Amino acid sequence: MDRKRFYVVHEEQPDRHVVYIKGELDLAAAEQFQRAVEPLAGDASKPLVIRLAELTYIDSTGIGMFVALLKMRKKQGAPFMIENVPPKVQRLFDLTGVSYLFSAMNDTTERVEGQS
Image 1 (cartoon, rainbow, N blue to C red):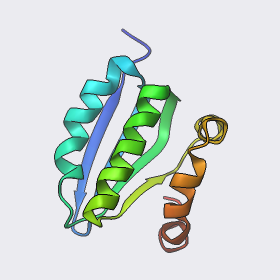
Image 2 (cartoon, one colour; image 1 turned 120 degrees about the vertical axis):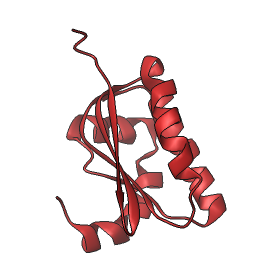
Image 3 (tube, one colour; image 1 turned 30 degrees about the vertical axis):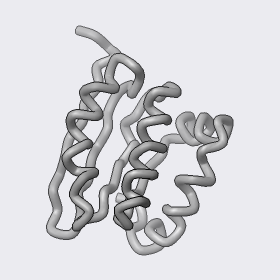
């Protein structure tokens, strides 16, 4: 089996869409991620939460997709959160300069939500 397998699991909750990402989000997984998340991102009636606890790797394609989601949701006036960011992925967010985009929007949700 391919150890770089990528999974996207959507859990619809009454008050939000939660997407769990597992594995490596790179160019090879980009289409699968987009197919899974695009319809949810278009639903501005509920917050969209992406949980990265089991994300083992992300490349510039994946980061670009998160930034595009953020812009789309902002335009809709709909909440978008990235939670449970592993330290290695956080370091990459820091190095690429996107941390401030995601941390600014997560400040309020982290206190309300906490870690699961």
